[in-house]
Length: 263
Image (cartoon, rainbow, N blue to C red; front, side):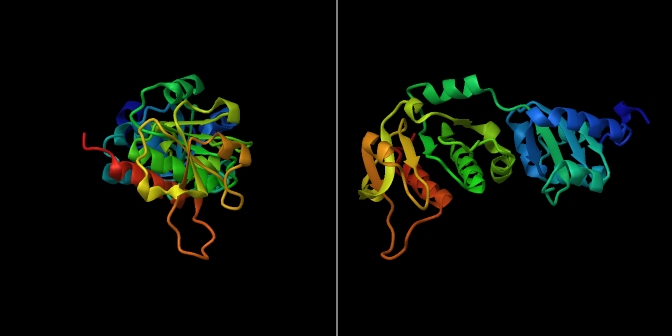
């Protein structure tokens, strides 16, 4: 059967061995998209997806038709069916959907230009030296859902690490995600979340704000706190130590969204 006749049905006529070899050759410099939803979102937001593997082409076709009809044709036409055990050797934590892909990382220069542009229509989220990659991904997912300009991190953690991309469900391609130096933060008034700050509910957050969050154990550094234009505190019951980082970000972003003037 020709490839043209199987478009939309999974490229089961392709040589799976060739597809696996191509994956291994490209994997070192590519972003891993682990799971159907990550691949779906990457395609929706114009990622350069250059390899899609699945352990079940027919199942992928059904899933795409049900949950992502807008990208179903592109997704299933690009997919190559390979043995599930082979796929597990390529993807350390294979998603239950049995789908994975490789893609080019979003252009850093374009990300930095978006983060640095003013005026902005939405804030930038700053995660200072985050440690938990799942939290980084969850914050990216929040940012994408609310149309935030971008998420920047400081410290050694790569926000494009496979575990962060998995936590973000591929939505790194829907917003600007970059690691930056503390001295090169995006422009805009710096709002730092800190227990000593003013209650968040009393604040109005401007669209060009940079909203900074520290680690759950240590909070923000003294250096970043000293640079703050405003300190804000989340409402919290006494004797409760802290919120999860993603929860703190969600509360703050929701407050920004809920208090914006109607457009």
